[in-house]
Image 1 (cartoon, rainbow, N blue to C red):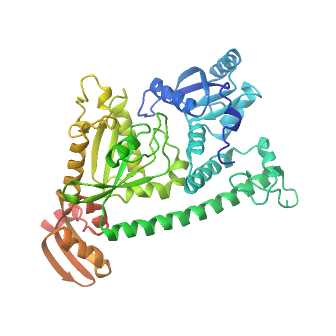
Image 2 (cartoon, rainbow, N blue to C red; image 1 turned 120 degrees about the vertical axis):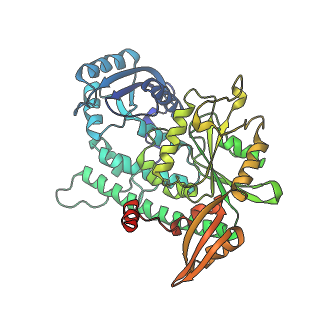
Image 3 (cartoon, rainbow, N blue to C red; image 1 turned 180 degrees about the vertical axis):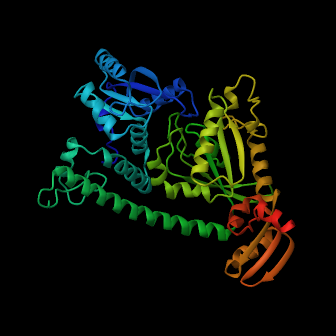
Length: 449
């Protein structure tokens, strides 16, 4: 099933109709109209031709058809008028909504949501074995609850035990009264379990690689940002390399790491990561856990923002929300406003979030030297005050504090050492699990009394 979620929609002539719903009380980083523009870009990247859009404001979702009944009838007419064979909702649909809508609209019209389109784009762009595994897992987990009778052909595709090229796999033996649909579901669950085991091995390999990097004491800097913000172009400019770059959404899925020599001869490992987007599917975040760990284990994040985009601030906030979701909020961040070459008067933002940002152009190179200097300062010159308890078995961290930090007070106690002092900002995440927690304010007040 991998790389086949929109197999029927790959013909460039196939037409798609977009639907956006604004729910009362639901918060979104982008206004409805802007979100539909982004959905149109996703559809285009997936190889579809957008022929129209429809919006509706609702107080609550229709349990059967998501949209109101009148809008469904209007959508049916518009699909017929525009010859649209695909309807894409900007909101995530339940399996029931998809089934009900497809039954009402037409047997020839497929109903998808934003998540399905993003999964398909990821399937197109996954090139490494790890990337393919991650996308395939996300696809299976997304489509398992959506399995209907139309999927029963999967078990008859032949070929041993499945795999990326053979769909779900062979027929297998059925128990008494077991339907073909149940067989398909059981085989998909087996496949999901197998993929998770494979990805656990990938994760273990990455952990060993990261441990090796930490022993070498070379800091890792991850480039994060909204899709198409210019992270790969920036990495190429910083390292004089040739990471794949394209003016399309999710051109980069697999992380790429390059060495950069910083001022003073220090070395940093810069890693390009998958671009984020609003409403990034939970299934993708879970499937790409091993890859996203590269971000959470970094000493510094470069948050790359396309400052020429009209929704730059909203994109910035959407990325921050995802970083929070994956547990990367305590890592030092430098905001980078990219694409100033597209701004007539430069990137003069008044947003507080961009007040201390580095402004540059990854195309022309303007501002690159300033960025490198700031990275060096953040990694080697900016210190953070900490008070930690380090068990004796964490001898490596004790040595690092002595070598790279500034010790103000050290006390040997049972089981380890307490150290009060300063460490470079890049090392904060290494020591954060051992930082002594402050007592709750109420408890302190009680002691004072």
